[in-house]
Amino acid sequence: MPNLFKLYRNVYTLISLFFVLISSASVSADEIWINVDTSAQTLSVMRGDQVKKTFENIALGRYGTTWNKRTLDDKTPLGTFRIGWINEQSRYYRFFGLDYPNRENAQRALEENIITEETWRTILHAVDRDRTPPQNTELGGYIGIHGIGRGDPAVHDQFNWTNGCIALTNEQIDQLSKWLKPGVRVKIH
Image (cartoon, rainbow, N blue to C red; front, side, top):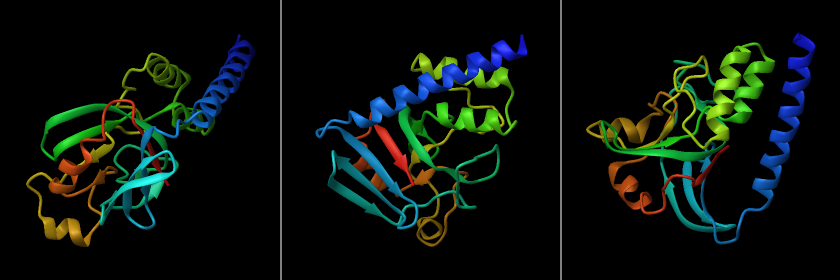
């Protein structure tokens, strides 16, 4: 039975990667998407390959970025995600939640024995149904783009201060929000 599950998992992974490649290759020139450059600490609104607006001086996770995010590591996950939900009443002013952890995060974590096969299946089950993946696994959760709320703008200007999210000023979030809706792609690199 374990060999059968391993075969199923490998076939499922190949099919999933195929769909990821097809969906990323078929991006429309008119599609709005978000490009987060963690080195330059900028967030750009893109339409196809055209920059519509760039926001500078964004804040990231206090301990940098990672391909292998874990609960409470205060790092911003790298990868391509989608806006999954919006909280207009967040303590961070507005919160645009990402569909983290996604298929790629789950697969990598399973291969590295960080999550169980049951957790892996639960994440993929949510992803396949366009639902928010579980936010309380070993991979962490509640990652998104948000404002500073009532936080200190001077801290925002000087430090990466988030628990793994991407933060902008409240004014920047107001400007950005007209482009953010569920399904919008967010590339963090």
